[in-house]
Length: 272
Image 1 (cartoon, one colour):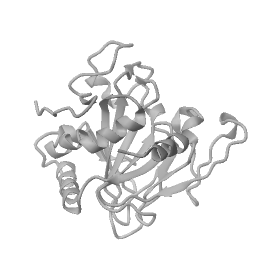
Image 2 (cartoon, one colour; image 1 turned 90 degrees about the vertical axis):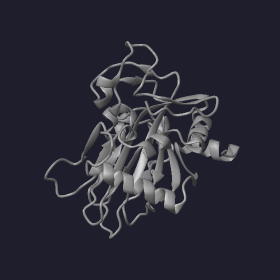
Image 3 (tube, one colour; image 1 turned 30 degrees about the horizontal axis):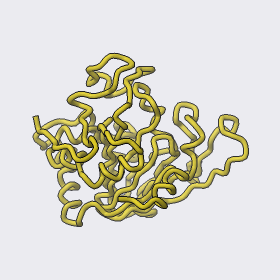
Image 4 (cartoon, one colour; image 1 turned 120 degrees about the vertical axis):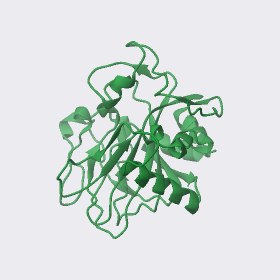
């Protein structure tokens, strides 16, 4: 479990780099399974498998959404007891469900940027904005190969213009609309390097982004977006997961595609 100081650090800053979850060999196996899914050779299919920057773009960010539907090892990952226990501790609620997971792989040399943004405004069918993402590195994520950067304390500022912050292409500095922010805030970006097999947590309103990967090493990672058990289906726009929702507006979001992974302790995963 995390110390009280670590939990307070998360409450204050909106992110924290956590412990190592996987050995090198375990991370390597997940990374290889990621490539298997991406190349269409897995036993199942993900919700999305695409270049996030668009077909024909000069830069590439491979996005795979709900890889847990395509591969049993990633299904096991979303139920990882250590990750779930730490997430429940940070959220402060004993029941967790999966909103969705997401691979973002930046290939060597041509890996593209993920511009500054918040997550929750891009999820316009769920409330409240109290989700936490567990981002696990499947190889070292460094400044050189495009690790994520965070703005400490930004989760306290509320949603910013639909989640898009604005990015200076030359410096990768966030360029927000200052009129949309509280007075007197300090905008400071910090890199979040994460070791292979290590997990980082961030709040769904924390500003974050990642620059190009110009290095010789790829940057593979798997994020699982966990929601507290009281998260509701509140449609106010469209989302990829719309077609998977089986509850009515205002009801708790749950069901086959939003599995409960923690309920006052570990929940056994089911492959059916």
